[in-house]
Length: 63
Length: 240
Image (tube, rainbow over all chains, first blue to last red; front, side):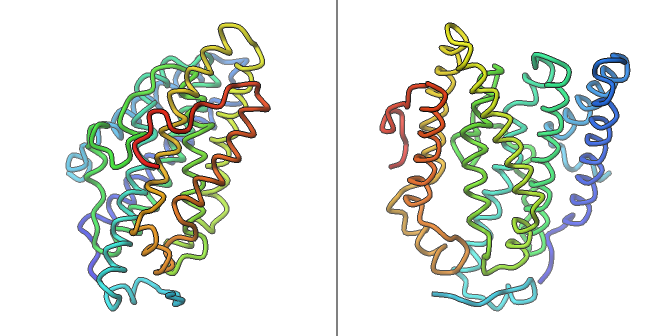
């Protein structure tokens, strides 16, 4: 069975997105009460990543 | 009934109907997984009530993306590229519930309470499925546990709003009224012939009607506990 083109690449790209999001959330959660700068930066990072994913411009991801 | 357990290497040898149904269900499931974040990230991530809530929205989106990734890999391995759903406008989604935009915190809560709960029912359909790579995705406790997390968050938030009474309760009732019919419709037609064929091929466990009845019982019980009105189950429905 031949896999669809970019199956592996898409999988890897998503793993990167997900890891980056989870890492930002994990970094911020322990500091929600004591360090707003860390939290704001993490939220900003999440927004940036999610904007790219929601745009869904897949061909750009594989350039 | 089809009782075999299949791996990727067996796929090409299967009946064309089996192949078509598997391709179809994977594309729809992948679309539903990424459809959620597309509904709420734009407006809810920047506007959630607290920073903790913002982080929870981001984490929820990441978990749904991971579910999409797993379904997309499973589909890709049998030659189905489901990356097209990533650039779809919401209005094109396979399932009506994902065709709008969530703009209020109450709707985000009820989306978790009602729609992610349908998502759990859909994922449970694949437990023990004849296609083992699909069964393994949902039998890994992580996926269902994450979905349960989204449901619990939404249910608790909805219950908090209801418990406040007054305007807060009215707003959450409004959100329940908006999503209840969409949730019921997500199960499809009760008399669906395709649903029977999914069951015949071991790709689903329950008929649409059976799953919807179980869901309705579960949700109505929770609405009663919250002191909310159960919406008319026939109002605003596309399928029965």
